[in-house]
Length: 159
Image (tube, rainbow, N blue to C red; front, side):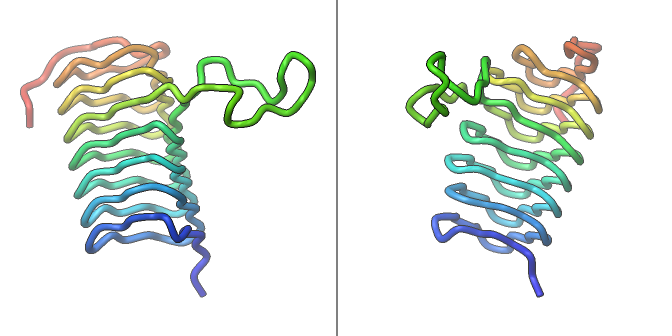
């Protein structure tokens, strides 16, 4: 028995592989992409072709991922600079009470295990984000970054 929650509005490319305990809604996933167990991908997310999304990863609304991207285990994307549950009057917030701050991940990027990608950043083509890093600003094309906050360690040729 499969344990997957894939909403009717999800668009899956050809040859997409989805493991169990996955929650997908309102997203687009490109051809031959693999989505590991215990992953949530929210509405409006676009993932390119030939990507690998490892287990326990959270990809929130506002994220666009290029082609050939590797996302390690337990990676989290954050789409709100100042998240709150309630408004100043104590009422529960709704979609109209906040704005999605987008994130863009270029082609052939590699994001290591347990990295956190903060809202409003672009990760350039061919970049590598080290495991456990917190990305708070744009990552240049072909940069290797690591740390909290992530800093450029060196540049590499496009692979």
